[in-house]
Image (cartoon, rainbow, N blue to C red; front, top):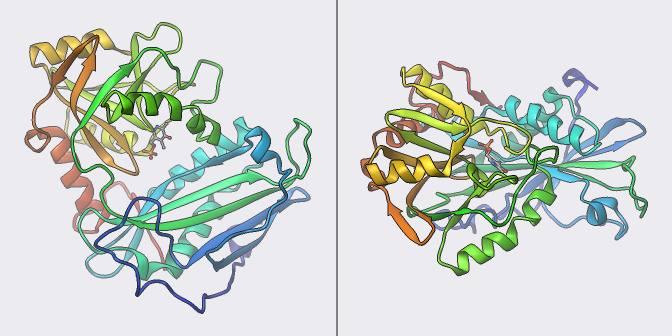
Length: 356
Ligand SMILES: *Cc1c(COP(=O)(O)O)cnc(C)c1O
C-alpha cells in the first residue's frame, strides 16, 4: 500500500471528553484524546487503517507480545501555532526509527509515508485537543505489537499498529538530581538498546525505583562492560557543555538515536559551536563539575525536550551545577526550538510537518 491508496476509515465519537478536560492540569500520559488509530498486519500486508473512539480493545491472552516482548513504541509531538495551524515535529525521523526497532525485533516494517500519514490524519481529527499554552503540546504515541495467539518463541505473523494522543504540559518542573548508575545496565553491545523496544523500559524500572528511594530523580546509565562511560539519562540522551564544547555519547548499539539529540546537535552546529560525539567518561564529567568547566548538562528527549541536571552525584559527593535558567546554551536551544515548533520562527530545516 502507498500513501495514495491509504484510505483511513474514520468513526467519530458521540461523546467527546474535550469540554470536561482540564487543560490547566495535564499529568503526562494520563489524559487521552477522543480517538485512536488502529491498523492490522496480516497475510504480509498492512490493512484496515481506522480512526475510532479511544477505548479498550479485546485481545487473546496468548498474544506473543505479552509473553515474549515483541512490542515497541515511538514518541513525538504536535504543536499548535498562534494562527491555529498544527504541525508534527520531524515525524519522518520517527518513522525511520520505527522501522529500525521493527527490524531488530523481527517485526514488519511500516512504510514511512504510511506512518507519517496515519499520524497526520489522527492529529488532524484531534486538532482541537492540541493545547495552546506555552510549553504544552499533543504527545503522540505510535506502537506496534505481536498478536498471534501462540506460545511458541517465534516471530508472530500478525501485528497491530496503533497511535494514541495525549495533551501534555511540561514533563519535569525542577532541575534533576542524578547519579551515575554503575551497577545495573540498560543495554549491552549486540543487544537492542538502540530500539524503542518495550523490554528495555521494563528492565529499567527496578534501577529507577532504587535510585528514587535514594533520593535521585534520574540515573545516568553507563556502559555495560566497565561502567566508566556515560550512555544515556533515563529514557533520554545525555548532553554536556564542557569547556565550551557540546559533548555527547556517540550513537551505537546501546544508545537510542534520539531525534531531540539530533535537533540539538544541528542547532549547535548552525551556531558554530564545537560539537563532539564520542565516548564520554564519568571521570571527565566529575572533573568538569569540580573545575567549573561543566557549564551545562541535560537530558534530551521528546517528552521533556531539555531536562536540566541540577546536581550530579558520584561516589558519595553531590556536584551542584549552575542554576538552569542562567545556562546560556540550553536556554538558547529551548527558546529557538519553541519558536520553530510553535511557528513563530522560520523553519529553515523543514522540521514542522503541517497537518490538515
Ligand atoms: C525515546 C528515547 C530517547 C529520546 O529520543 P527522542 O527521539 O529525542 O524522543 C532517548 N533515549 C531513550 C532510551 C529513549 O527511549
